[in-house]
Amino acid sequence: MKKLIVALALAATMGSNGSAPAQVYPSRPVTMVVGAPAGGPTDTIARVVAEHMRSSLGQSILIENNSAAASSVAAGRVARAAPDGYTISVGHWGSHVVNGVIYALPYDVLNDFEPIALIASTPQLIVSRNAVPANDLKSLVGWLKANPDKASQGTGGVGSAAHVGGVFFQASTATRFLFVPYRGAAPAMQDLLAGQIDLMFDQATNSLPQIRAGKIRAYAVAAKNRLSAAPEIPTVDEAGLPGFYVAVWHGLWAPKSTPKDVIAKLNGAVVDALADSAVSSRLADLGQDIFPREQQTPEALAAYQKAEIEKWWPIIKAANIKGE
Image 1 (tube, rainbow, N blue to C red):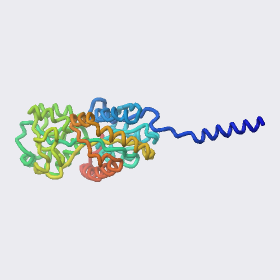
Image 2: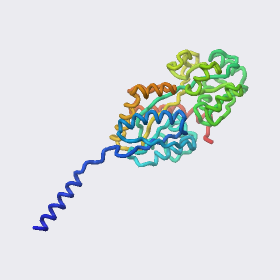
Image 3: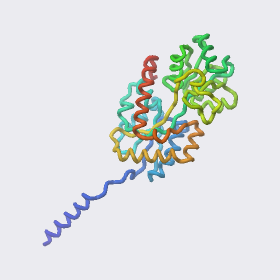
Image 4: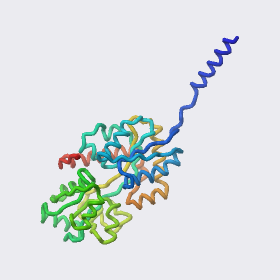
């Protein structure tokens, strides 16, 4: 009898363990790895979105900043992380498109991640110092053609959006000018204001305050639509350079093979965040355009990233741009 009771108790215990419900995701804090320093545009976007995602997920989201090697260290950390949804990557056009062609990476920017959602995008503005003798984009191109290799353009470094945008501009307009690399857009802007360089292809977030103050001249926004924050600036299509679209966009990724239900839960948290008026207002203040709801899916991010790689890699390879 005692043996029977023990056997029944053991069977009951095993049955209980076997039918225990799986742990619901997320059951602990999520780490969001940001390939940028604290306080910059990418970090700010990540924190604004993460703050709202916390309430949707019911867990804290820890921000981990690492801007080493042009964001490749941060992206590599996520590529190698356990595919459980607890380590995710906020990346952008540079980290998940450009880095794949200018650096020899230990991971694949397209195939070693699971896309979660597109977040927002900010187009470049074509700007110059006020002393440049051109009042519109067509006359700027004419001035550059008349003075080959004499004008200078500031960039945020080799392979930066400003550098690649400048290379694209040269190819699109048959112009030539010098590239002057800086450690970021802020010091480049300082030299533009001081008249040390002539041009910049710059994010709206960085340029708009100087444009509004009348300290630099804006020629066009490199996008299909005008900026809601500066509707007086024409698009490149309107200004005479159709199709010259350059934008720095942000998205969210998880390690490859992260379960689909986890991706769906993370995607839902991002979508909820972007639909919140406080979040959308804060991103608008940063010059960011939120992607339409139909483009906020994992599938849309995968397609968008692939299309950007197909567009930019040939341009970068033709210019022989290599990471430092």
